Length: 112
Length: 118
Image 1 (tube, one colour):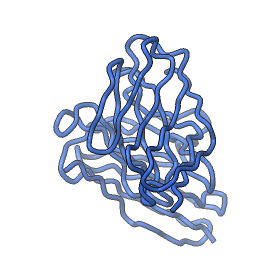
Image 2: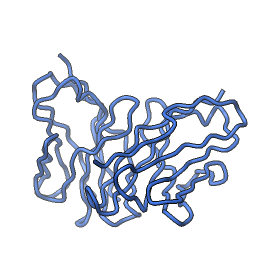
Image 3: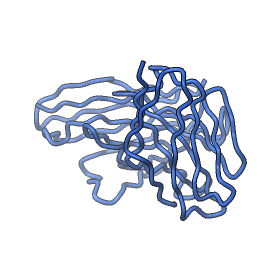
Image 4: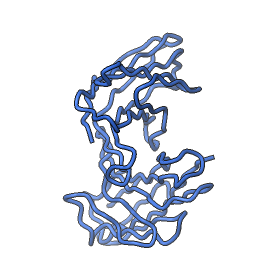
């Protein structure tokens, strides 16, 4: 599975959009981009995933560049409860029995 | 839907004792479950993949005789930390892979179990 690179930390003002970048320059054609987040002392929570088209759900939007080498997770109106560590993970749909390998992630601090 | 529970949520034990942690998928079937360990201020580290009805697959460096995994049914996997020592103190998290219900191929995580070994 391809490796990802994320900034270690970011700040965002409450009510503003939070844009979290992820680089995955070695992604292959059948690998998806997944985003999870982990609020302190809880299990990770699935946010969104995509292959090459932009995706949106009730939590966030995922923008994947045309060459698929990078992506951005967008939280449109960040709240204090969005403060968490956000993990970008690249994974093939059927590779390695589907296991997720977590990197260091981005710690997002939403400030009032 | 797609809820995964863990029991207990926290446990304190004496050095040398064994501790069992349960992971249950409450509203879906999971032929595959995963066990992770997380130390303070670190990311999740995958320990093993648990497959229903077969032996678990352990990641490199994880002692299979120390961390016993049993996946006896489509909704339950257990992790037993045998002869626990203080260095085994950690946050243990399981995830269950949906076999085709709520979200095909997606993984859902439990709330974690905090183990403290005195």
